[in-house]
Length: 371
Image (tube, rainbow, N blue to C red; front, top):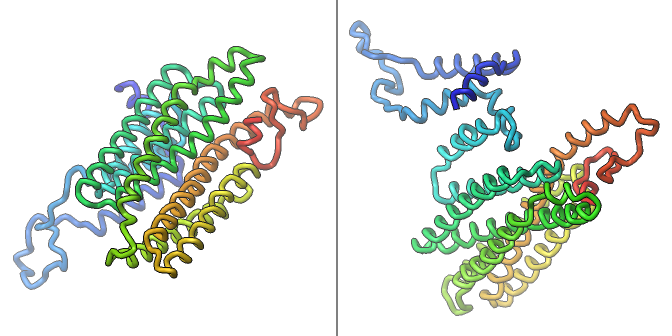
């Protein structure tokens, strides 16, 4: 660990980063002056906010300084992979800072889903490069499982506290995240197996089989858990709260659908046509379910309206998280392809296929990489 920090001392920030950090520190000092005693000659003068009486949390101050002083390093580390120089910084600084500011159970669960998704994304990117070693696979899977188990514990606690709706929503997020990565990893594994028939080394380097099996198992368990939680929310049409609950879930489905549609707009031109079609399929299904939920609610079939609205939310989540997973993977794939493109410029034809079977195009399509 000491070697890492010795090497970090050699990392230089560019002028813009130093200027921004210096400006942030000056602003902080200006807004938070230190006064250890009141001026006896000006007893009438008092600050609107008594800094003397204010108690600062030392961990919070420390984290604020870490963020201010290491902004450039944090940004550089955010996209690293296992084996990269700054990857430990990403795990032990960037992500710990995020954990510190996740104050509620729901926020901690959301963070657990995001970090679990990031570990899977890292495995996918390494697999694309055929660099997923047994050591990296074991580390990523262990961290992935730790985050999932942490989230499962939060869901269980929320259910025990009677917060069934919050538990169901988090369970749906977990299911959607697992479903998105199951699709991607399945494609990567199929591609690796196909290449393995020609190149045995490619098959060995994929290393995705055990991880994919784990995800499929957890995806099935998440589906069952979500179904059980949503069944508790449905109630009966005669329930006094049924009408109100149906309205709430329909409104939440509309919000999630809008979020998925906005994510699709942002992804335009950044993902493959096939990836886009998959997400659009989920969005269309969510929209159809939402229309049906509204129809059932108008007919005062509130129990069925709630079920349909919850399913619409799940489909919209599937679309949103799948798009985010593809965006994250495709963005890194584009960088790799640009590097490969530069190495191909000395060939007789710059438009020939790369050895992996890729065609260079303007957009780095994940689907093309899998062909």
